[in-house]
Length: 109
Image (tube, rainbow, N blue to C red):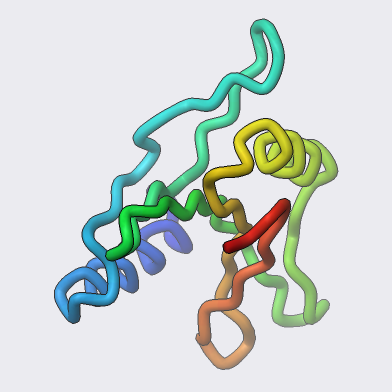
């Protein structure tokens, strides 16, 4: 895990302890996007209602006030969201004050 992923894992563990989620897993499952092409989100979060949120953690550049998402990463998560619409898909990052922000893709429930 890199630094941002470690911070996100700590955040999810606190959510689990507080009863906000059932559990979370790091790099748990790969989703096939096309023959020979897979995407493994950083986090697989199982919500209390049994639904799943799949999260790809990204870096936030404070000096530029923007999230760093490469085009390939954007394509992967959008394809995954369209191919697997039952799950919630998002990018997550910490903003300049340290709050976690999420951008969801596809049909969110």
